[in-house]
Length: 91
Image (cartoon, rainbow, N blue to C red; front, side):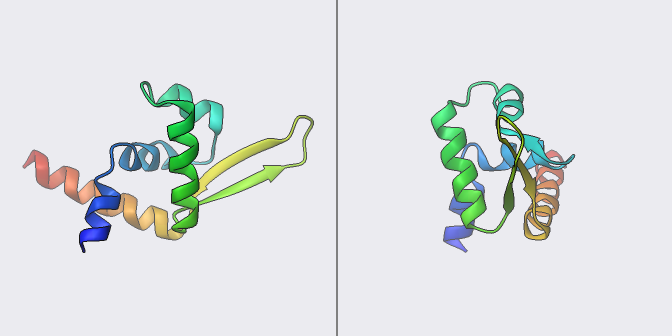
């Protein structure tokens, strides 16, 4: 429980998940949608979320290569939990 709360409570995790809820996003899009996040922090957070099985990273063989990030089923489940937490906080 402590590990989960620390993970979910990290500054950028809920915001990255929120921005991916509407569908796949490219790295540059996420940078624009998350004012204040540094490129290194975003890259680190995306790697962590991928390692935890919350998002997928898809490399498209375009020129130049295009990379998209999308929530997995597990990531969408966490998104629902974050919504419940937000609802609780407002009530």
